Length: 319
Ligand SMILES: NC(=O)c1ccc[n+]([C@@H]2O[C@H](COP(=O)([O-])OP(=O)(O)OC[C@H]3O[C@@H](n4cnc5c(N)ncnc54)[C@H](O)[C@@H]3O)[C@@H](O)[C@H]2O)c1
Ligand SMILES: O=P(O)(O)OC[C@H](O)CO
Image 1 (cartoon, rainbow, N blue to C red):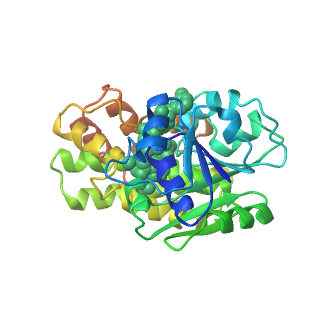
Image 2: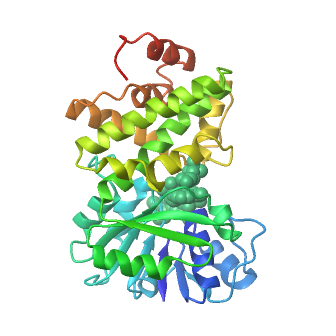
C-alpha cells in the first residue's frame, strides 16, 4: 500500500495512476465530503470527469494512511510543516516523498529540509517535474524527477512509483530538484504577466531565459548541481509552466497583466515562493531581479509596466 496525504488535484492524480497499475492506495483528505465523493461515487472533486479506479480509497483518519511505508505528501508547500506536525505515528524506516513545489516561508528551506527537521527518523524525497494533474489522471505520458539523498532508497521509490505512463528519472540532488520546481512557478507568473500585458512572445522568451539564469544562480549557490537545473525538474517544468494556460501560476500572471481578478481559492505556489526567494536572495547576496519584481507585482507594490521598465533599464551586463 502507498499512502497519499492531501486529496487535491496532484495527490489524487498520483493516487489514480498508482491504483491503475494495481497498487493499493489510501488517500487522506481533511474534508469528509471529499472522502465521501472518492469512496462512494468514485469521483475526485479536484479532477472533475475522471472516474477513480478500484483500489483507491480515502479516509480522514491519518493513522490509516501513515501505516504505508511510502507516503506521498501532496499538500501545498506552506501547509507541509503543519501537516507533518499532525502525524504522531512512528515514521522510522518510512519514505516521505514531498510532492509540493515551493519554499517554506518560516524557514526559507525546501520540502526535504522541512521533512528532515520534523521527522528525522524518516527518509525524505521529492517528486517534481513537468506534469499537470489532469494529464496524469487521464493516463497521458509524463516524465518526472524523483530526488532522494539516499540513492538506494531513491531507486526503490523510483521503481515503486513508475508505471507505463508515468516515467521517473532519479537524482540525489534534492536541492537542485526542489529549487527548480519552486522557482519555475515564479518565472511562470512573470511570463503570464508579460503576455497578459500584451508584451509579446519575444519578451516571454527573454523572461524564461533570464529566469532560468536566476533559478540556476540561486540553486548553485545553495549547493545544487548545475545539470539538475537543465533537467525535468528545472528547464522541463519551466517550459511547461511558462507556456500553458493549464498552469495556475501562469494564469495568475495573465490576470495580473490584464488587470483582472483571480480566484484566490486556487493554489498558486509562486506567490509565496517569490517572497521566500526574494528574502533568500537578499540574505545570500544573490541577484534575482525577475523574482523580486514578481514579488512586488504579486503584492500590488509595483505594476507590471513598472516592473518591466525596471528590468529593461538595469545596468547592461554580460550574459
Ligand atoms: N495540480 C498540479 O497539476 C500539480 C502538479 C505538480 C505538482 N503540484 C504541486 O502539488 C502541490 C499541491 O497542489 P494541488 O494542485 O494538489 O493543489 P490543490 O489546491 O488541488 O489541493 C491541495 C490539497 O491540500 C489540502 N490542504 C491545503 N491546505 C492544507 C492544510 N493546511 N492542511 C492539510 N491539507 C491542506 C487541500 O484540502 C487540498 O486537498 C503544490 O505544491 C503544487 O505545486 C501540483
Ligand atoms: O498549475 P501550476 O502552475 O501549479 O503548475 C502545475 C505543475 O507544477 C506543472 O508542472
